[in-house]
Length: 171
Image (cartoon, rainbow, N blue to C red):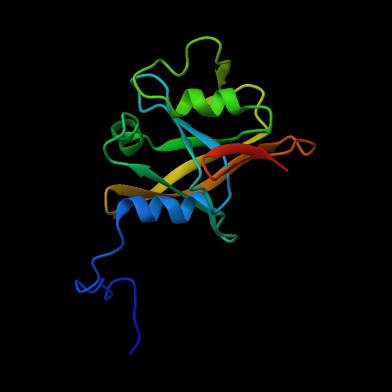
C-alpha cells in the first residue's frame, strides 16, 4: 500500500503517551535554540523555539512549531514573513525573555531593529534567516509553519545556544 500525504490519517487506536512522559522523552533530546520574530502589522512578536528543522534544500524550506494557545500565534498566522534568530551560547537571557509570557519581549534590554523589508530582527544574534511563510499545517495543539528561506546572515565564529534536560548549554 502506498501512503501519500493526502491519503494518510493516523489510526485512532493509538492513544499516545501521557504528556508528562512525552516531555520527559524530549528533555533528553538536545536542540538548538532560536527566537522566531514576526510582525503582521500590530507590532513585533516573538517566541523562543527549539523546533526549527531544515526541510528541503531545493527550494530552501524550514519548519517550526507554534502552539495555538500562545500570544504569538494569531500574529504568526496573519504574517506573510518571519525571521528565525539563531541564539549564541551567551544569549540565555534573550531565550528566557522570549519564553516568558505576559511581558513586552521587545522592551529594554532587548535590542532589535527592522530589516529593510520590515521584519523585526534581534541585534547581536549568531545569525538569522528571513522567511516567507508558505504553509500552516494543523498538528494537535500546534501548527507547523513551513517557510521558504529568502535571505540569511550568519556570524560564522559563534557557538550556538543549546537546550537539553531543562537547561541551556553551549558546545
